[in-house]
Image 1 (cartoon, rainbow, N blue to C red):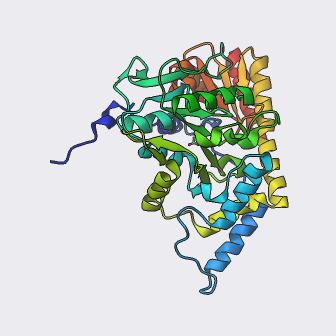
Image 2: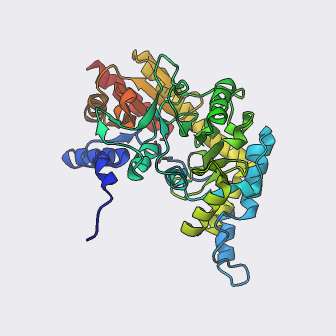
Image 3: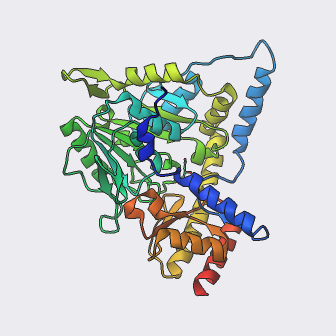
Length: 408
Ligand code: MLT
């Protein structure tokens, strides 16, 4: 008899963003003439930078001739891309990461979801609340949690991010073997200082824990005193894996390219206390289950490190940050407390009411889609997340519709 993975029965009915997509479709069906402006899921709307498109075209042309055609590439990614990443994203900021510690993939969502496979099933997992739901759901699927009860899974350590702590969680008071952190944060848009991040790294070193650091939104950071990478912090190479993505940085959500850094000095322990390099484990997993990102996509990604590519990518994030500034300014003027939007494309708004009610109100009265904070965890209740990924004109229109809806 084929048996189901019963851990799946502990999951909430559907993935947050699929749930929202269904609600939008239902609304569109009911009111086909109503215009909808989407500031919900963080999906980019602007075209790929010119440098990426040109590199993409050149690589496709190479694939059109036997002499330059490429079949399977290295599972870990082509060295032309891994070397550029090591040089520009890490060495240039004083972080000692080498090309062979970088694994190219088709998305940070997949990597943050898949990485937990290389750890034992009985570890204690610490997860921020609110949080990008992938971290939680994949650990539920793997059986590391108990049942869902009163808005939380049993056996998870929740790291609360609230107004009181400036949306940067305090160190856990209980044991935590695997710790997820994300800065600039999704969903709150909050950032962390080097000093605070150092506390986390020190905690991980003292407790033989590991930090999974999601830096998918680093391209939006404008405050240069803040760490873009966890490896800018002393000792992090021994206790942290970092995830990055070209999705939001360079508009690759539909093109798919990301990377994960697993330093060779990062270890996990077996039941006898023997050390095992995580780099070898992830390499084993990656080469077994993944055949690499396509050659043209990797060439397109490489182009963001050229002089023109760098300028174009900066222009792209500046564009969304201008949207973010407008959203934050307008929501604040309407009397809502906001965080984020300054070093992040997300604005976390205290809606002062049930998150889903606020979501429904904005959809019905303003035709604007946001993401209900409660979908990101218990501490997200009462908040909504507004994304800056849309055209400036649509953001302006959305803000004036929200203004009208609120004053009705
Ligand atoms: C989000 O809206 O949180 C992200 O777009 C989701 C993702 O990157 O998978």
